[in-house]
Image (tube, rainbow over all chains, first blue to last red; front, side):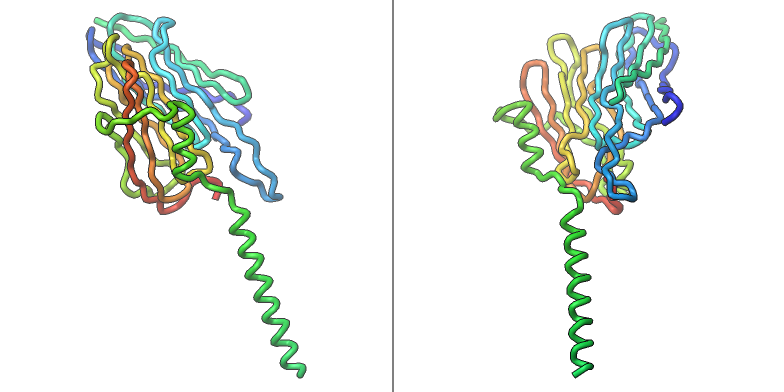
Length: 109
Length: 153
């Protein structure tokens, strides 16, 4: 992929204290499994996002380790219990070492 | 005589074609087996016992497109500091590689539930393993029928 993928995140911007909210994420990535062969019979090398992490105010909340069986343009959702206002940092880690980071704010009333 | 020999060569040609077809079949990537999934689980948890229950797998009974099969896993838990779901692993018994996804939850999640989309090469069983904070383990299994496989095919 020539352009750097940008992780998209959908979650409500405000929540009541104690409310459990759903966080939905999506990133454009081919997730090349390393199982496919090109026209000349050569194995196309694996290149996937192997780890997704979510942290809130610097504290880890949720982590997903992805294997080649995860679909391209991977979607991931999880839940979060709102306690205080702060900022999420979502990080997608690519096989090539690059990291794609998206941040979202959450206000707890 | 000449008729016989031409028939013979035609038969040989068919035989060759058959052999070529067979070798194509053999050359297709080896798929994981239930044993490989069991050994992957064994690598993580040794020969510890698994209980049933607590895990709810939401997967389609029939997946039309094996490239994008939605999977939601929810594990029953109060998700408090004292009692929460530590990890959930998803394995596929008929994919080239047994591992699909591994989740790590924290009490901050409030609810041990996550959704993703996976590739399935063929009709197969998908296995979920959950590890609780007190060390207890749970296992669940679901069969998914795949109409069009989604791994390299």
